[in-house]
Amino acid sequence: MTQFLSIFWMFVKVNLLTTSGPASVGLLYDFIVGTLLTEAQFVEAVGFSSALPGSDALQLAMFVGHAINGPAGALAALLGSILPPTMFMFFIISILQWLRGEAWVTSFVRGLAPAVAVLMLLTAVQVFRGEDTQISFSFLIAAASLLALLLKVPSPLVLLAAGVLGIAFAR
Image (cartoon, rainbow, N blue to C red):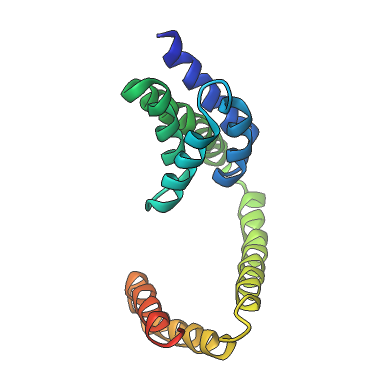
């Protein structure tokens, strides 16, 4: 039971002290390499969690927990990884439910929408910058995707078609 709580608490700390999956890898490395896992085991865990579909952070947590203490360790790591953000979201949701009738909250959300749109646009620009040789092709796929979305084609189909076009024409 103490091993379960130790793993659980380690992952609670990692998730309280970092903001994302990739950011947690360095802190997790400091916590476990040399004490609970070897560097080779940790590198293997990061590699497997990155190669599999889904949340890298949760897969890394379960892999590390399992390597330390079997299925019970995987469960402890998973719970320790999920608990902090879940509790934080419940806290935020309860505050928003309490404030939802306030006019300033609606105005706040209206102010957020353009900022989020600009951040998404800047992210897209950074993605396109990395595409020096295929920039016109990237804009063509972007335009076709926008048209498909405006025509109400389901998003998964648009993404699948864009990926297939990338395989076919962007070699």
